[in-house]
Image 1 (cartoon, rainbow, N blue to C red):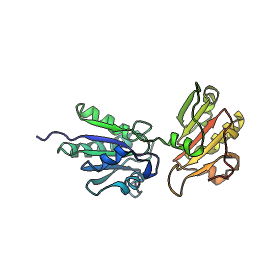
Image 2 (cartoon, one colour):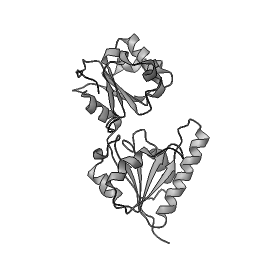
Image 3 (cartoon, rainbow, N blue to C red):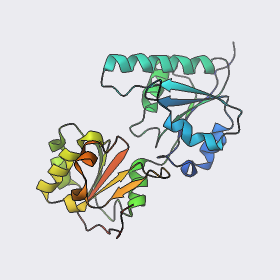
Image 4 (cartoon, one colour):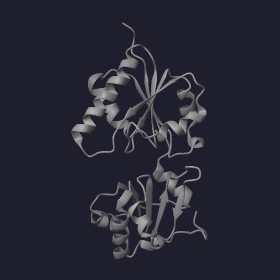
Length: 249
């Protein structure tokens, strides 16, 4: 029986191909198979678009479906199927990579695959390569220091009930909100009541060429913006004054 191949979990950053690490690029051109996630059969894989410019053509690229749903049964089905497909490659002695936006161990689909594989094959060799998270890329793009000295920072996904974040606003000097989506209107209302709406910045599709948008004044957002801001959006809230540019991008 062939020895199992090695799996690499590769963080590919927030969207711009140039933000791939040198090591990530090298590994992607070393493995036999690259697995990329997408949310539906008819939707393009954002991760695949990011890595394609650096590939040398050696690796076979396969797409795995990870639907955007809260149905745990449906999710479990796809995680098991993905783990099975990856295992079938590794058991033939081939090395593979699973690419994921941002960092593999930070709110990533990769974590579910990693746990499934470890449950079934505890001795499987898995190497995880870090990537740039959208949280940090957004701060850089907006020109906002995340933490200075002993400031406290929290990074949280925005809950459906946006009122839940209210205590975090008091506890932390910097609050980074991920997965904003269609909940932005509720977030803005919370920030207005807390007197912090002027201390918040919205970053959409950070680093993605031609699509990145930075909003320094959330009160200027239209009703359409508030309802359709998109999943790949981050809001940074600071208690200290934020240095704002004269023109929005």
